[in-house]
Image (cartoon, rainbow, N blue to C red; front, side, top):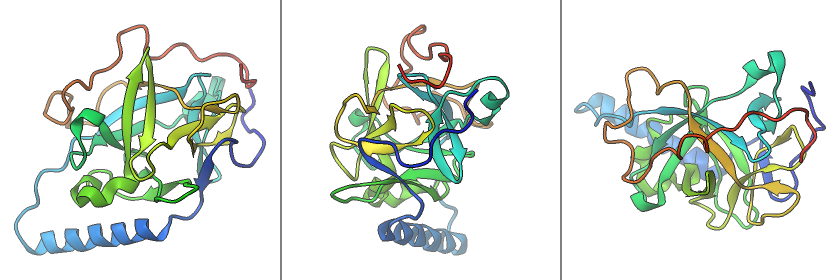
Length: 231
């Protein structure tokens, strides 16, 4: 069933880093200070609704945690329970036409982030996905622009234009960022709604930007392929 694969970063881009960059720590400090100030003053504005989706790359590799890193591999049998669902919120600090979102796992308590840099890397940052949009433009490190074509999505880093969320062509390698589409990387993903949004939220409550709809039925989430060998 190929539960574990060879260690190391995926090829073709910055692999997921273990430690966040300093700007991310400063942003979290800002958010904590804002939360403390809000507790002493008027009630804060309502937080964004959180939606739960499933994501896999074009080889149908699913996301799961291994050694604290988010990796992509084929999960079959009992291993299917290890799949991490993706929680996301829209980020209105950026142009709605670009479908900006902040994404995380574990109910949105650990978010994907990438600080700006010449060779950007990806990390999981402990943060509340509901609070991050309140940071405005400072939340760019956590923001990804979505684009959709022929049933597939791409996710471009707002902090690193031209760099896209990617997986390795090899199974069980960390998620990373890449600016090239070649035989070693996968930039395209299937992105489909899970069973339902987080309890207490629902699509259509104003959090989904105009034009941000699921792909047509039948194009969203094809069956998981067999084996761990990339095609």
